[in-house]
Amino acid sequence: MNFEYIDKIRQKSDISIDVSEYHGRISACLCSENLTLEVLLPEEINANDSCLSAETMQLKTVLLSLIAETLEQLNDTEMSFYPLLSPDTEELTDRTLSLSSWCQGFIDGFGLVIAQKNISIDQIEQDIIGEIIEDFSQISKLTSASVMNEDGEELAYMEVIEYVRVGVQLIYEEMRVAKT
Image (cartoon, rainbow, N blue to C red; front, top):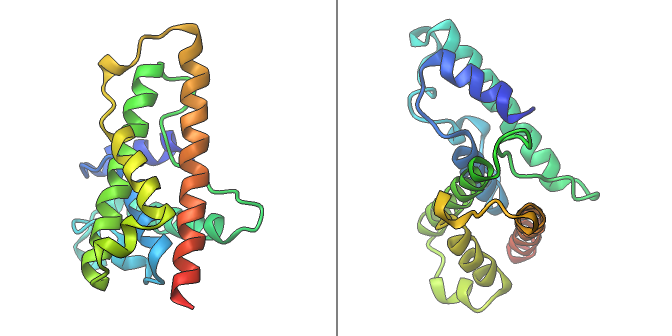
């Protein structure tokens, strides 16, 4: 499943979600607990199917597939998880903003889980998870002014994506260990 396909369907359904931010949020929620897929759907899609337009039903199906695929990637021993971001054909500025939105979504989702599970912030801060979340917070603050479009910027962007990818896998593993 790729960003462009999902965003095209989202536009047809006229639902205003940021695809990258949404994927960040569901990734955080999937890291922390076993939820039913429908719980992770946006409110405007998680309604009675008979009330939804054909376009919105298509988006619902696509998002449910995305959630299942994301969970499968998180469980993969080959560490195949990858954040859903604007494609490499986009300008570096747009891809950076997409990454920033993804990290903000992850932070929001993780905060929701902490609140719902009543986890102490102290427990999180003393751990590698706290460090990763803090780094994601810094990444989420990136703006178009943060990108200079210089030669080294592309490599730096790729390194940050790899850090995010591995960071999510580490959080997923740490949360699984904490459950046992």
